[in-house]
Each structure stands twice: as C-alpha cells, then as structure tokens.
Amino acid sequence: MQSVQLNRVAVLSDIHGVLPALEAVLAEPEVAAADRIVLTGDITAGPQPAEVLDLLRAQGERVLWVAGNADRELVEFRRGRRTEIPDPIGPFAADALRAEQVDFLAGLPTTLTLTVSGLGQVLFCHATPRDDEEIVLVDSGPGRWAEVFTGLADDVRTVVCGHTHMPYLRLAHGRLVVNPGSVGMPYGRPGAHWCLLGPGVDLRVTPFDTEAAAARLVAECAYEDIAAWADYFLHARATDTEVLELFRGRIPPEMTGTGAGA
Image: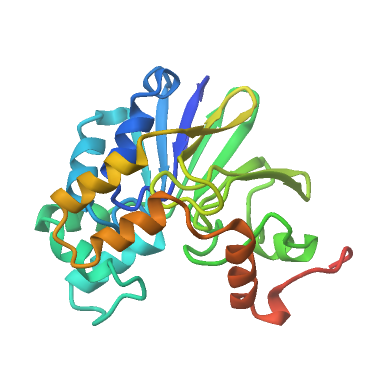
C-alpha cells in the first residue's frame, strides 16, 4: 500500500492492446497532470499488445499496474500452462509479446491500495478484490456485493474495478464502487473510457477518430480478422443492454445475491 496521499489519480482499465485509444487518453491534460495513472488490468489482450506495453512503461513510475484475467491468460498461454484462450484474438496477442514483456506481466499484482484525497483508502482490482474474472454489475444485489467484499479491510471505503467494459458509479454496503469502463473495447457507446479520482470521482470518455484508428489497426496489425475486430469494438457495436444480459447469464443463480437482506 502506498501511504502518501495522492490528489489526483487517473484510472485506465481494459485497454486491450488498442494503441490509438491509449494515445488519446494519455494526451488528455488531466491524465498528463495526474499524480499517478493506475491500470486496472486487461492491458494487452488485443491487436497491439507490445506497443501498448512499451508506451505505458515509457511513462515511468507514474504508472501503477494491476493485472487482469486476460493478461494472466496471455502469460499462461506463452508459458505452456494453457493451450487455448477464450478470446479469439488472445493467441495472436500472446505470441506478439516479447519474452521480457511476458515476464513483466507475470509479475504484476492482482490488487493495489492507495490513499486518494477525498476518498481515503482505495482498492484497485480488475474484476473483484478476490478474483480477476468474477462478474459484478451495476445492478448486482446487496448480497452479491457482500460476497465479493468478504475479507476486505474496513478502512477500504472505495473499490475501483474493471472487467465488464461499462462505466458506472454506485454505493454498496457503504463503499463506493467505481468502474471506469474500457479504454480500448467499450460496450454501449464508443470512445475511450476512463476516470479521474480525487477528491471525488469523475467518469470520463475521450472521443477519438475511430475510422482512422480502425484503418491504422488494419495497416499495423497482422491478426487475420483485424478489420472485423476493429469495426466491432472501436465502434462499440455491442450495446450495454446486450452485454448486461450476457453477463447476467454467466453468474450462477446461487451467486446472484439479489436479496436486500442477503
């Protein structure tokens, strides 16, 4: 845990190897001026993983890292601990990483706690504090949040997560929950989504030229389905309603925690 209180923290989640989207966010004046940039996972699984890592690491100690499930899957694939990745672009992304980049990803933590002005102790994770692919949604019930907060220190009053690619802000059991949305693979509406912490929470979206970005990905990425991939994800073809229904279907009924008293 970093004990120094930070005034402003920019949070970037689910970049998914989309360099033009990352460049657009890093060019934001308030991101450039932030005390720290925190990455809440799924940094590399996409069309330009090596380039995204290089750009982020060039920012130096201002960037603080948390691994996501997709980053873990790339490492496991490269190290022979799995033979397939659920995301079709995953094997391409894994093979595009340099060996030292795989080692770097393998060493990333799964959570990070910082002190942020106005918010106190803030825990950053990818999906939930206890699991890198567990699903919680903006409308998940109190019982579900109680489950995922199990074991969390009482002084952690804000939890920042990613994973579902849709921004939201809500209160659950007295804790503020923040999801900045996705920089590179947004659901619901296009643009590079991120957030600014301190002293409050400001959900942001950075517009960028998606047509030019898609053309650039096609020109620079050797993934065989890159044109279709870029069109679908950069233009946010998946609606928030569709994705919420998909995610709800992945939560076992016994883990929905919908009861108010659960």
